[in-house]
Length: 272
Length: 275
Image (cartoon, rainbow over all chains, first blue to last red; front, side):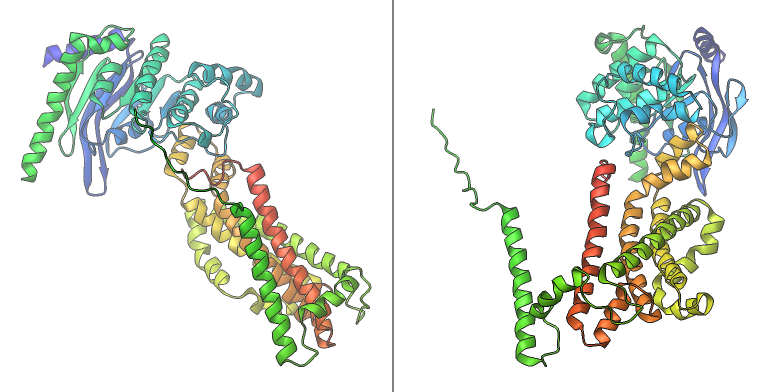
């Protein structure tokens, strides 16, 4: 146990010290206890993936980190300061994109900057850069309804990146996008993030995605859920399509899979 | 290789749009014919009928119809008076409606305080309080203005309230994540997100405003199309009165067409939003 804790400390230190510290976090909606006893640290240049069966509270945990939901117990600290409402320097990419349909791509990407009081000149300078970064050149005047799901999420990603966040929270960002586009976006996100790593918490129900993105993979289990295991991915960066073909990738994927399967089998037995 | 022939259905000789237009025109002509025929056949000669209206139509719209009383101005003057009252009332009523609707949707205290009153007033025929208005404002155009304002205010307030209550949670999460101030949440997110509701409310409001204005003119005997209809009918100039009725129908259609056109032009994203 001590060695595992030391490993985690080492991993966090390697990635520039902890940016996010989660201590004894528990969440409850009325009678329903969603999760409890969550302890987790995320480094300054580290990506932590969170997987778990649906309904285990992954998305709720992410909202606790952003301060959109108050936890029942425990505390989330970002840069050492306890989170009570959405802190500065945190951006979220939402599963359903959360784009404003009455705004163009440009205006949507500019939203976070505008709310932060960035000057018009700076917005005019920065927004095109992020639109280009996510590969949406030429679409700045398009409305969300004119874009495919993949392009809408590129817009959502650009809006999050534009505020140059220290913490990037990804709430199943590619879950409502078709399989081919999802793969393209995964590698683009990797490219963007690896060129300028920040703290990233990546919630997903796809095991492949969790392993591909994460430096560590957190597996949640149980009802109420808690951390079953934190798996060191240990795949070198930059990662690319070749990463998917490595033995290590297969090994980690199988490991995460068997963890989740045990859980699923147990649930099945309970039902019988 | 065997060639496969696919038989395409024969293209129609008339485009559907053309057919629909002809169908509409035909139905209109049949209805007019029925009216003309039934009145000629069954009713006394002073009952209005399409041919009678057609006979006086130009006389009325070219302002040559003699004013019957001092109150009734020329036809276009009355049209203008009613329209100005409707638009003034709409402007005030819609502005108030948007603000109250937003406040009810965003602030629980305002919601609890006002919800049932606004709902009850909406269900009540606004015209019923016209006599009270005359006590406060007399038989004046101010009474008409307020009755139009109330008529326009209620549907807008209720619809905007409904729209704000159905605001997708994600929009609010985005707003909170990026530290939007309350005025941005109200006017930058809640208002545009409820535009579909606001526009539905606006259509209702325009109809109700027009009804309120005309009935007020009718009952208070003040200048406008309502009084034009009343005085012409009472002096058996029913054909002239019908021209004013047709004018009111045209105004109603024009307002709704304008709302539709403005929606298409200024809100291209609207109607596709629900995809």
